[in-house]
Length: 302
Image 1 (cartoon, rainbow, N blue to C red):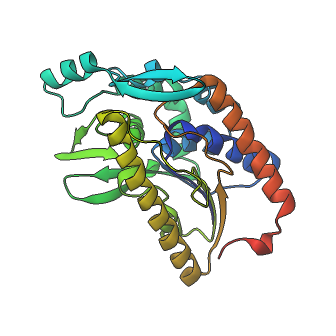
Image 2: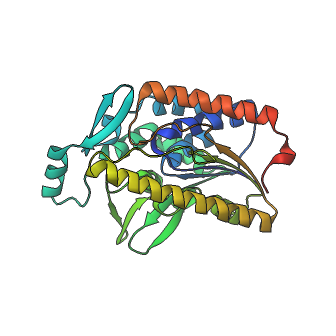
C-alpha cells in the first residue's frame, strides 16, 4: 500500500501541491491512502480525485478574506518583507463577543464546502482510496484521525476545517462535547499513522527545510512573539513526528521518501500571497522532478 502524507504549513501548502502534482501526473504514482494535517488536509481530497488543476487554481488564489471571517492581524510590507501586527479592533470585538480566540475562520469552512461537492465526496467514499484528516482534541489531550469512510459529507468537510484551525488565531470548535483545533498541534506529519494503517511505501511532503536554515527575527510585538513561539513548538513536534516515523518504518520494513522544502519559503505561513504561492507551487513541482531524476530508489529512507 502506498500513502501520500502532507504536513501542516499554512500558505506553504502550495509547495506540497506542486510536489504532489509531479508525483501523480508525471511519475504516475497511485496512492491508496492520503493523510493530511492542517493545510495538507485541504489538498488531499482533490489529489485523491486527481483534480490537480482545480486545487491549484483554488490554492494559489486564496487570500486572507477567503479564510478569515474575523482576521486578527494586519499585514505590513516593507522592503519586500511581510510582518504582521495585531488588529486591535477585530481582536477586541471578537473577545467582547465571547469568543475564545483572537480571530475566526468561518469563511474557510464555506470555501471548503464550495470547492468539494457532494458528488465528489460520494465518489471518494465509494472508492478504494482512504482520505484521513488529522485533528487535535484539546479536551481529551489526544490526536485523532478522521477517515472519509466514517462520516457523511457535512461532517467530513467540518473535520477538514477543524484540522486547519490554527488557534488562537483561528476558530476553536466544540464538537461531540470536546474542543478541537489544528491537527498540527499534535501531529504535524502523520507518517506513523500511515504505516499503522498498512502503508508500506510513504511519500512524505514536509513543509520545512531538512536542516535548520533560519534564525528568527526579533519579535516586534506581542502578536509576532506568539506566532514565533507557536512556530517553534510546531517545528519541534514535526521533528519528533519524523523521528518516530523513521523508527516505525524501520521496524515495519516500510520505505519513506521525504520531500523537504529546499529553502525557507516564508517566516509567516498565515500570510497568503498569490504571487508567492504560485512560485512555491512551481518550485515544488520542479524540486520533485529534480529529486526523482537525480536520486535512485535505493537511496530512499527506510
